[in-house]
Image 1 (cartoon, rainbow, N blue to C red):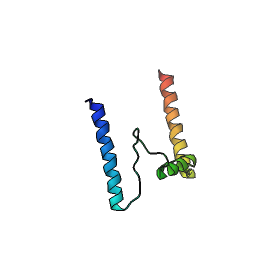
Image 2: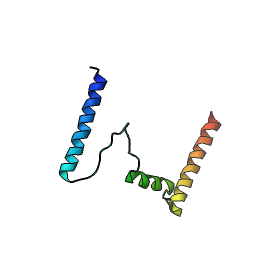
Image 3: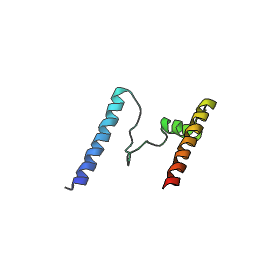
Image 4: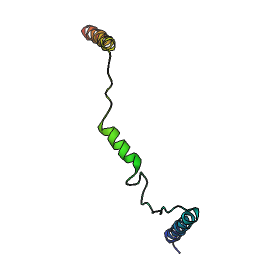
Amino acid sequence: MEVSRIIAEIDGQIAKLQQARALLAGTTATTTKRTGPGRPKGSKNAAAAASAATTPRKRKLSPEGRKRIADAMKKRWAERRKQNSKG
């Protein structure tokens, strides 16, 4: 008997046992065999992730923060020009 066939039979038995457990536990959810890793189709989180990706939050920079960054960049550029003129 091939290993892949044995594994397939074991997976089938597991699926049957899960269905029986669900019936005994009182839930009517059926289990389906997934073909690969990842989030299943129709997941609640997929819709939330898609909506979050389409509407990114805009971060605001205060005028003081903008001035600090501008001053730091001007200082950096001045140092660069000084190094290039020496070399």
